[in-house]
Image 1 (cartoon, rainbow, N blue to C red):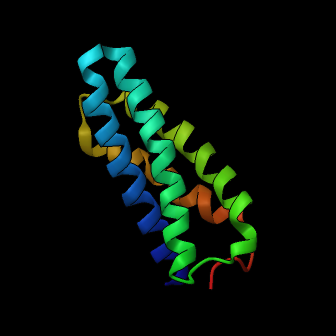
Image 2 (cartoon, rainbow, N blue to C red):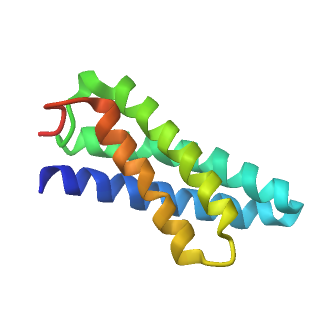
Length: 112
């Protein structure tokens, strides 16, 4: 259950940030959509990690690994989401890789 709350919170915050960036970037075309989602999604991953650490759910010493894992998950998730723009639920589901990346990047026994 402890892992699930970290995964879900990271996933939801990253998906919200990426969606917000995609909507803002859509004004500049398809490339703007991708860059907006990536940039705001990256900031959302950092915010998610800070929220999880502030709540005491993740070991603060594992912040670097969680960030790297979250960024890798975001890169994979954004790519999959961009391939599936016609199916928004699938695009949001692809961003679940962020939550998994945070937990896997933090390493064993990082989640409290």
